[in-house]
Length: 112
Length: 111
Image (cartoon, rainbow over all chains, first blue to last red):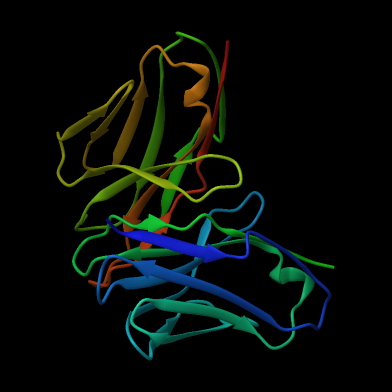
């Protein structure tokens, strides 16, 4: 069966520090991968999505970047965090042609 | 621009008190409408996919229905464990496999 792993679960980082969040999927190949952010009082905002290794589409101009170095690995990064980067970050995967996303357990990021 | 609106933002029910949540959308050429359940501090969990007007899906106390402009999530005789935020989503237009989500309805069921 397919599983998705996302870590860490919580993170407190100072303003200006770097960020690296990792997401891996098991039990499938060539998944579509997504990074969403959920801020208090706001809906899920799509940040990045990828349909293959090295293929990244950015949805919102921001202080973040994403990379997909391996088929089932998706990384969210920042060189210098801002206070506005705080939120709940969710990784998700789906099979091509299928919109039924499976989400990871999320990372609660607090920038202080 | 694709838009998904959910109402109400929050709903409090007594155990056993049935009700409905609404999800309206403005996309044309709908390629599916998706319902998710999200518990506090966790990722959303997939519930249903609806593809055409008139379609219905059921799971335990939940039933999702779809019309040409909106979807309803009916909750029959809810229990406290049904308390969660319910999200609906539709695909972005343009053929890409991306979902746009509503802000959700936070359901609280009191015993």
